[in-house]
Length: 324
Image 1 (cartoon, rainbow, N blue to C red):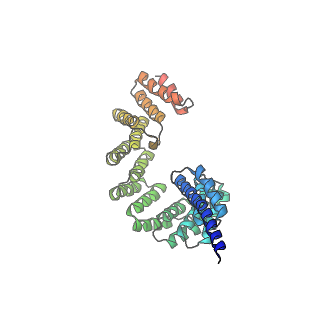
Image 2 (image 1 turned 90 degrees about the horizontal axis):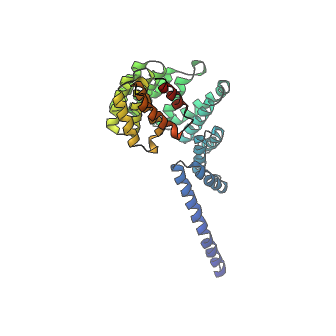
Image 3 (image 1 turned 45 degrees about the horizontal axis):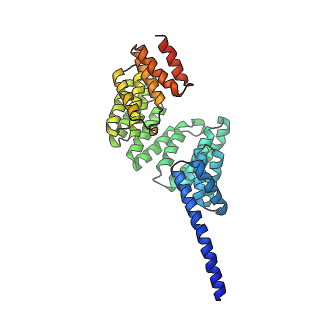
């Protein structure tokens, strides 16, 4: 190589390095957007990168995940199917492919959904087979087999088998899965027993939530309040203050405690708590209506309607309060 060729190559390299650095920076920015769930910003960057690197699996997975988040099941299925074909030994690709098909099936008519059943089952079972510790795949199979009618291959026994596998990987997930099966098959006492075991072993907010929801579903508001109160003491999650206040309002139960919890919710509110303030105002109005305190109830219901004039539940509640 002569000196001229050498310097040409060095010059070209120096020219390309900044472009490569910019591409890397853009991609890292897209990944940051993805982590922050700012998918509309991440998507065009990933799409542009994929045009230049059509075989990049990670980018296709990102785009599949973004499509799934937006409930664009056809696009998600296309991305995940290609990933499965490229890397058939990857359990997570099979799980995402089967999961996207399952959610697609739930969004269409039952007649059309039948065509997906075999493929969903195959992909989820393949994910479980490839990864003996894949919790999400086993959860999906528990739900798949318990929800699917027997005529199409549904089986409580198979659901229990996968719940047992979950228990070997994670005791909490095993108890929660068995609780879910019991709840789905209308065995609330068994479900309660399993959810209580999940709380004993794990005690996460989710375990308390499952038990509380079971109590509400079975018209046991006192037990639901006790469960949420225990969770609040342990986890200090502000959203639980709202849940206690909601139950108090709905069932006309422990009004003073309900008012206290809703006041705490509003005092400590942040957008991460999930339930907007106007719902807390609405629940306070309900409690004061239950107590027969019309003027205070009107104050809170009007506060709920200030920010959202089309709040139908609040409009209906106001009519009830005015009728006192």
